[in-house]
Each structure stands twice: as C-alpha cells, then as structure tokens.
Length: 307
Figure: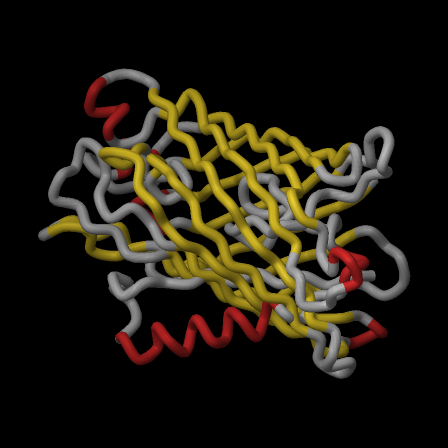
C-alpha cells in the first residue's frame, strides 16, 4: 500500500511564524512529500476531494484502468475553525478514469460561529467541482528523475461568504493549477514524496473566506515521511504550504497569511482501503485592525475510503 503525506507551506506573510521558520517549513515539506509509496497514489483525497495531501493536490490521479472507470473514493474532512469561523465539514466523492484523469464533487458544510457581526460572514455551505488530467507519467521512459505532472481545476459555486453576504448574493470562484509530484524510493527505510505547484485563483482560503478581489498566481507544496506504527500500521508525518491571495473581496483592509498544515496519516495494516488523517491547520488570526478570526492552530481530521 502506498503512502502519501499532507504538507502546507506558508509564505513570508504568515502571521504565526517568523521568517526563519518559513524556510524550515519548506524543507520539512519537501522531506515529507518524498516519503510516499506509489501504491497509495490513488488512495487519499484532500480537503476538496482531489487526490493529494490535506489541502493541496498531487499530480497523481485516482486509480483507474487504461480503458474505463476505477472504483470511487469517498472522504470526509473536518476542521475546527474556532468560535468565529465555526466548524467546517467536507464530504467528497471522486472517480478516476482512463488511467490519467479524475473528477469529483464535494459538498462544503459548516456549523455557525458564535461572534455576532463577524461569524455570519463565514456561514453557509457551497458546492465544489474538480477535475484533473495527468500530462506526464512518473518515471516516463524509465527515467527515475521524472516527476508526474498534471493540470487541473476547482470550481466553487453557490458561495455566500464575506463579499457575497455583504452584497446579498451568491458568488463563485475557481482555481486553475499545474502540479508536479515525485516519489523518491531510494531511502528504503524512509521513502519520501515531494510535490510543488502553481495555481491561478480568485478564491480566498479555498472559498472559506469567499472571493479574492481578482485572479492571482499562488504557489503550494507538500511533503512527508513514513515510519512504522503499532499493530503493523504505517504513520506518515507531513506538512503543507498553500499561499493565499492576500486580500478578501468586500474587506479591502484584510491581509491574509499563507495557510500551513501539519498532519499525521495512519494507514492500517494489510489491504484495508482506509486512511485516517489528524492534523493542525494554521489559517489566520488578525486579518485587519481589530478583526481577529482566532483560527491560528486548529484541529483537523480526515478519512478516505476506496470502495
């Protein structure tokens, strides 16, 4: 069974970490990503239903035959956003086809926060559609240095957050990305997987904060390593970085940091097609003078199951 980590990388605008830890986080991310085994490439779905880490996509696609569709994968993710943002719940289904493609749907839900005047800006569910196409297979031509490279999109609809609430209407936002992912198996005791990508987006914090003022180019990355766990299980430790658009449409004074996650993925022994993730996400604290989201070190949970 293959192993895949989750790793989020924060930029220099992150409010929770000094500049020195910025470089350390990137290094850890790269180390984490290189520790996944190829068998699990199609095993785990991320926050928005893509094959990937916790909040970032990998270049791998959900497993499928060269002709036809693979078995679907379902996942559930939860993030405790704190008393301002409330709790977030993501229910996803994804299917791979023709060995190089995947598509899926996620329903984003949340429980309301408890801060009058601020929490209502972040309440309400929305739809997430995604698709991915693999352009270059990993180790193409038997060259071990070639990563998998894919392009993809994420479309969020019926979004009523921040700017949508202030304008009294539903909005939509999208991501268009390219990502490269490489499994490095040379260290048999400690395999490594690394991933790096670039996206153009007008979504703010994956749609949680609504829309950004315009489309912007952002970078992301992830990495992890695997160690033996109890009862013949495997545990992946990883981290991710997801650069965010700095501003929120409707709140011109807002300044968002990069999103960073740390996680542990538990893979049971044998061929049980189930993975469970535990993590901590650093989203945002003070986004403008006098406005604090109190989402600095938030607990996250995820699980993926292949039918």
